[in-house]
Length: 389
Image (cartoon, rainbow, N blue to C red; front, side):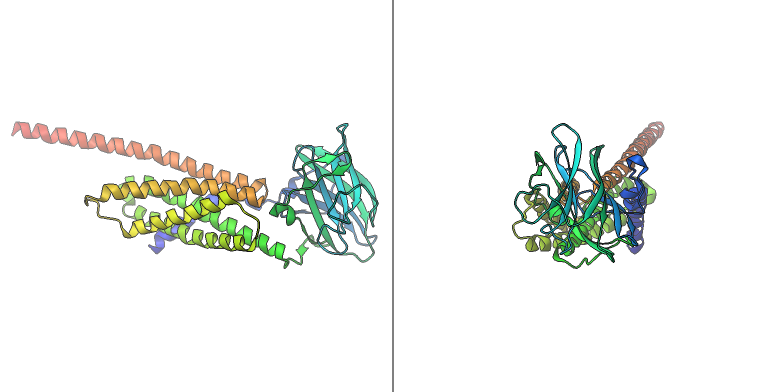
């Protein structure tokens, strides 16, 4: 049992390695800019699929930057700001880029002093070389800020919105991704620090919840189904396929329950924030997968009269779990908004699993047809021998 569990986990590791370039490559390092703009450091920001590139001249306290993000709508806006009082919107000294009525891009400064409508205004920092671009669905803000002498850390806030009225950005969404778009940045090391706030803690829990559920329901469960569906056909894999199947499904169940419990805790801590479809699918997954665990305990022998009904129950519940799992993983990715690279990575994992399942399906039918032909030949041979006796 232990060795088969290790084989199942090794299979999972190989699948993840297939998509490792997408998982470990930083998106910001592949981004290039017009006018041969090059920056010393870059960071993929944790929300809103955004990134920040910068070069910091500590001697003069000059910060040259490029902020990149997709607006919530092509006619929307993006914003990056420094807030000297803390990582929050109120008090932030913002640069906001948007498309003007004539179609050209503009970037203006805004002193955000309230939650109400804002208008262009001077900010507390001297700004030069301001420019905005819109390329390939991504808006970009370029600027150089003169920061106070001795500055090493800044409180940054970033945001995206869907509409602009003249030169006035309209309110942005209040989704968790928008509310979590803030942090403290070390300009010298490129590290986000001070990650002990409630928002950062919730974001960490969301990431843990997403990883646990993706690995368990979204990957281990389909792998277990592929093993049971195809490897059982090959005589050399009997009874190893059964232990591999049980190991993958049980491991997926244990990890999935941990992710499910994390989701319940997040829901309890997020009063007023509801994702009913994602939540209901998660509850259904827990219930159906628990039924699958009981299926192992209730499994009758192959020649038992109830075995056919058990097979129907086990297969229908199992495939329902897989379908709901994949749907709910994509629902979770839409809520968490970790960036397109993670969605693409999971799609690649599913494609790899699908390709493996398709190849094994063909091999399974080849083996079954050969076996059936061999059995038919044997019966005919035995029959003709009997006729001569």
